Image 1 (cartoon, rainbow, N blue to C red):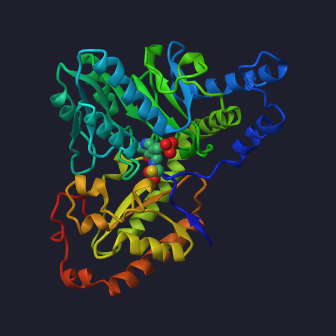
Image 2 (image 1 turned 120 degrees about the horizontal axis):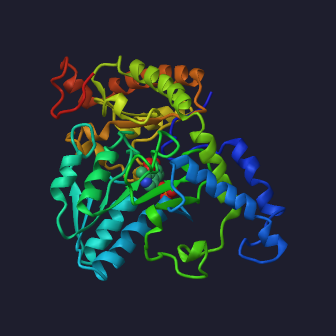
Length: 404
Ligand code: C6P
């Protein structure tokens, strides 16, 4: 058996999505901006796909949804264009974000700092989220934008987006949320929550890689990142990727139809896996499970180096990760675990397991058994665990982590 538990890195494209995309490669392939029938033939499918995205996040007709190449582009667009529009060409000088954002936000903020922008990286609490009152206390009259992720790719923790949105609205500050790990996994209702900009990515909800979107509330102005032939109403140039847009539409429709039912099914499997792994001594999971997306576990196993564990899991045909896929090659400690106060040794023990609606009970059983054997094997050869083995109960916890 082989088991894929790295669905926060990317997901399998649903075969129904592949089927929906198929006609738009070699049958209906015209450029949608062309006036002839080859071009206009794709218009109904494009309209259909964009409507599905509007419906999935409950956007209103006044809002804009612009397709991009990925969420990295969407995040770059918001941050760089708010800088141009409100800092370079306005009277603001400050952006507020968090220490635990995805690198596509953090690296862009670092770039903006080099251009002279003041950036505040908010600390997170012991569950790895930023509390709304913390955001409020750092907003100044010079703040142009607050950028806070909806859910963490590493822990699955859901951030208080409704409260933060209200604070930003009251203070007249723009609010961007990286919704990549929320859309398609938990309900996202933009009539219920005030968000100016929301980034999305199709490959996180069983759509293709290389297609994302940016939601723009009330179609407000935002200088384009991609200048060119004025596609998408001049907001994002570049020939529309029709098959991928169709795929994103189909994928978001499938992910959000019956989302409560889908969430309950994934959660049941996730909780069963988590309960079984927590039977191992000196293990803990970051964040209360009710506060997380239903598919994610970031588990720490004292004395077991994350990379060693990944290697062992991989030998057992199980795909997991130590955290964000784009940070997984550097062998650094897990940044989110460091941000919540884990010591360096503990921050090297994190394993992210992320399920999907395609994960089966038999796969969960297989992972439980292989995981437990792997931990036993690795702890046997771990010098650090041998030294700490006598500890019982919670005293190995140097930091305020949720201990089981
Ligand atoms: N996170 C992970 O292993 P792209 O691929 O550009 O569409 O999405 C980037 C991105 C942005 N925001 C969040 C919260 C994300 O999780 C990701 C992708 C993967 O966690 C790959 S690094």
